[in-house]
Image (tube, rainbow, N blue to C red; front, side, top):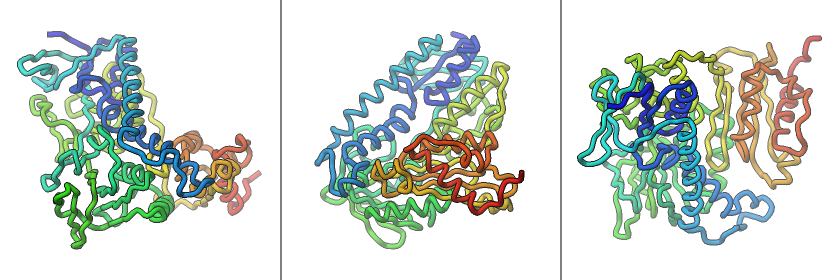
Length: 466
């Protein structure tokens, strides 16, 4: 039986970062991946495929140029599934090559197979029908990610009824689409297909969605969705799904209405991919959704030498935060210093349009009783916005009236997930409204919206004390 200082189960963002961090600290590392190629859900079915699909759709549909050339403008008139798949395969191959090179350069060994605990330090890996190898690790990181929640009453068939993992595996452009679930994944896919002028109906059991996002941003987002004809069915559930003679999906809603579309995407929740890990052999218990509880500072489970990181531990379920969780877990396992985590991290939603946010929402500021002022900038107010033909997009900044510090930055529109990092830096460095007012921004840029929004708030705030 081979022995390693660290065994990592899963090679997604959390797994890869913990493995490489441990290797850089001089430790022997084994990564176990149940696919034939490394990358985890992020590379194969999640983050990279969905964002690649989004970029392909925006390019081929001419979405970004319609402000100038009209709603009928198209780069490619008839977009087909093969158009979407070609770029996807190229991107995935590149991501996998980069990751394999990182592992090889840092001396990280990888093995393909299904892992299960034999005891708290021993992992058995099934590499074939009759073949199993055992490995022993001083420390272990569980980074298996999640898989789509598939309720029994939904007739998944991968031809007309899909989950969020297999919808990107072989992309198609349906004549119409129902998306069940207005979470991050559901909204991303719903708006991507809508950008190709596919009629989309979005069904969500809650009356509101993305509750952690500032409500003013969501109001703008909903306005954009309705403006382009997306049907929103909020506060209702899908009680049944049947297939008609043509194979189209007929969804019966709790309010009695029926929706018939060529394709249905069920994206209402994900579960931790912990089934089959044999957690009972080492005293770890997953919750009802397969997620693991950890110490949020060290990412240790209740078994001190076993860590968990990434989507398998739940919110915020971001590739960016998963990487940091994996790195911190490896550092803690081998006694390396762990700098304190920044108070705020950015959240990016790659819908069309993009949404990104960092810091407190207006409601959170009100709940804390902090006197505040808001500033708004519309992208169409910037010269760069005019040059790009942007008709929508906005930035909202929230400042404390007492300290003048930036408390929250919230953006919807083109480039939101890139622009947010300026707000992230200012918030974590405790910057104030005066930073934006007194500094120059490249002109013309969308980043100039920071100065416009800051000035909007500044004009209603008391002067800075001398």
